[in-house]
Length: 104
Length: 303
Image (cartoon, rainbow over all chains, first blue to last red; front, side, top):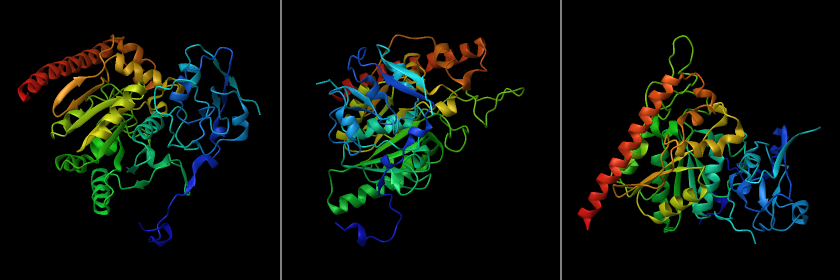
């Protein structure tokens, strides 16, 4: 195989988009009530922004210390990237996710 | 340990620039989960051409190639040929085009690739108009819908033609696999995607992906709309394998009105218009069931 630097010059997007903090788009913020949550992971399944993760998803590059410390084996919301679409709150079977207005 | 119904691997990163509640990003996420790391994706001009992010950012963790609007079929054929020349036989090549790039602009390249039976996956993610450029009508816009080029007003000039049946068109090329998928049913989605990965030859997948921006629907209803489209039979889930039709989901019918009234693009429709739409949808559903019945006989003939 030919290494990258030997290729003819073309624009190559090489930076992972986790550096883009799309959380700033949000007007409503989802908050999980872990008492009501049954760990069905439907919210994780439908998240378009990959912003709900399983606690022990060790394969993921952007895993921050904050997320690592939270409850094991539960959905955790990544507020750096969540755009606040509300799909998780809508799809949650036990209504454990509430959308609260964002305050600045 | 929590039980997951779809693969855990994430090959799409957050930080992409898709709208809030975008259906196409969910579709790409599931597709990459099913196909795995050994995949090359080719994307023409469509929503997904802007969604990976502004250079040098990219939300995909698999190689991604941008091509011109009409060249998806040709570019994936080329990538596959190059891989074959390099001896990389186990790499899946996926073309990922929108409904405009498939049903209208990319039609001839798609038809040519299907006719040559190239060993690639062609995905049409269908948000039912040219959403990226400002909601213009495409060949896949359904009957009765508002778009900026089929406006609603005194002229009553909304979409008057039914949706182009892309799966039927591609299946008529005698390809090994063609199917419809919906983001509302992730398990079915991943199952079909994995099935397509295992088959060699040209595979066509039509993904239904709601667009809150263009459909004027609240972003939280994206999966709900995808489910309602299937249950109201506006977008039936079926697959065509070697010319044999199989309806993969026969849900209990829900009223079409429920599906239409969640979307601003159908708000102008009167009860009579909706009845007309319902008739059209029922007709298509019956046609599909007949096709299933008819082609099942073909299978008997093969044995």
